[in-house]
Image (cartoon, rainbow, N blue to C red; front, side, top):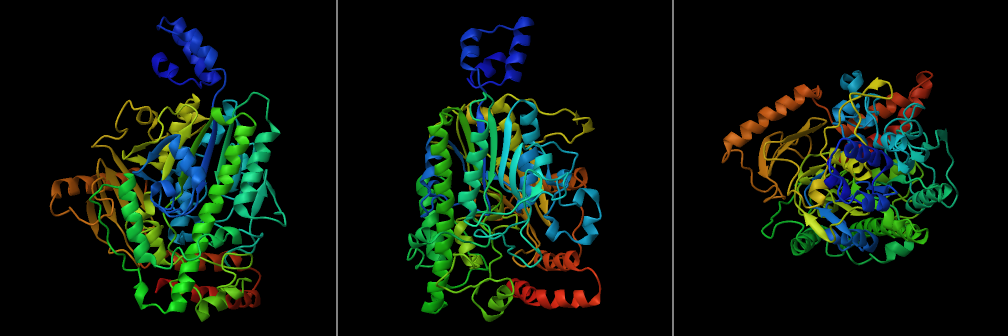
Length: 604
């Protein structure tokens, strides 16, 4: 980093100041150094906010009807990425987000609940964050930052894998893939309890718990605990919203009653129009209709009302999250830290599709009743209620993109990202430059003036960061940080994708995929409507070759024949909960039978 580049950012850490002094001693011109050093006496605070399963157009500033004024205010004060991609499932994305390393090298190529035994026997397929990577929290903590986490972790639950041992000074963390938002209760029968931890110890949630409110309360508590000591902080806030079960306070639900009465097809079209108006997607963008999308008009009036309320609760949960983000922002203003705080907001993957098309069916109600859940219309979203959005509304949440979570179509991987606040000169800007989840850690390090780790860190060898620093793009020094020949690959449970310049090759398998490689220009055609593999065979073959290299370089394992991720969740859950003899085994099978029916029905 040159002196001229460093002096453009008035928020410089002590480590960067030391390097500047060394440069001056070596005779590098340091024009204006005294003025810049005077202004650079404090490194920026960093707040990394991660939504869970948020669709591409679920934010107001990305084309949604959902009111998200707090996040929109951040967009006004920074830069919005419209071609940012993450992993297609939560834990792989989180491992890459926090390390800048590919998921197959972090040890988290898939969530542990979905790993088949043929893969999980290998160390790099453990489904937990390996000790061969160093987190951005560790790097910032070692550079003098306070580091806090309040929210979903899902990267390991043994003592050495909890966030309190991975660089976070204060934590309250959910170890599972998800949980109830109103009480300490598992949302799936594969868990015997909802596993929460605080500072490395098992934790009991308060009686008045609601996830979004609680997580912001704890973040504020952590920040205030060291307020005034002169050290910057890094706060990671991975919300439960809007992961299943989709739940929200009644006052937020009321605001969306009637909003979705027109159905999912109308909503998908409305969001496309709005996204075009905002410049989120090109003006000539088109979209496909997913095979999983039902015909709204074929539903009875009663079923339409029920489906509309399912989505109303979803909208309410997004707005409730935004409301509590607003509380955090206002608190930072009140303690005079807002102007020195950098905000990054994004999602771990695209919209969740695992909700049943008919949530209130007899079999589903029977299965959920064994877990103490109701699907009654009157109480949808409230305490004791289980709710999700259907695959049809999931497609609307991802509009105008194809596919959703678990799949590597754009709807599963392209999500909103906003960077705003301290050190970000861009205001109300937008970029369609390609960016990937591994870019977050190197960007945070660049903005805080903290060095990347070498080949060893903390006395052990570590994987190198492969992500790119987005700061030159943010500062307007370049139009892209990836060139037309830079390849970025990703694989999840046999779904495969590689990005190169404006192009993407994609292979979707399973119930919604066709198990065929396709080529798309995702800059011009984000909806993936026109396969270019025949029209542009040279580019297609070049990218296939690059993907094969990615497989070899990252030791990507083949998926077992007949693998289905929903079935594997049930099988792994049975295996984890079986112990102590045939009688207990039979009782557990009976307990989980409705759950098995639930998952098998969902596949249909």
